[in-house]
Length: 157
Ligand code: FE2
Image 1 (cartoon, rainbow, N blue to C red):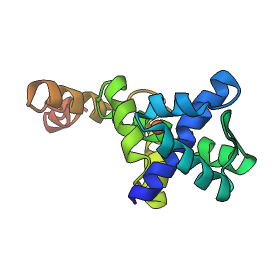
Image 2: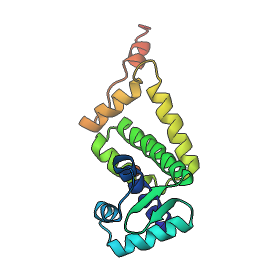
Image 3: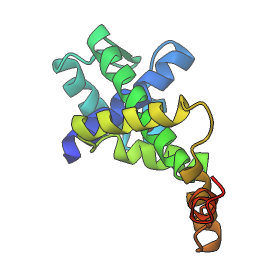
């Protein structure tokens, strides 16, 4: 699991740097990830062997089509997880930070369900009542009375 995380973190970092600078310089990867340049070089050679990047010593790395595909999948995972966390009331900045951890460990099955959940909530015609109630509960520790059932009890509805 650790190995997968590290590989994916490199791919993400390279993706971001490549989009910004055209290619990912070894020194920039090193400072971005707080990893020694010698370790970066070693990892870049490995990533090249595995087909994720094209590596030119002293210049840096660019993602191959395969590497880009993996990077885009990671970005998608990241967004689903961050959106989910935001729905349950986590502020965006923390949601982003945690998404970057969870994305490397979540199974495909769980991610699929999270995606459905986010879709279900975001495409709802209006914000589901239970979310409002949940947010109220988070803020106050108390449940909001559900007016629908109360009114039903009184035979108003
Ligand atoms: Fe991420």
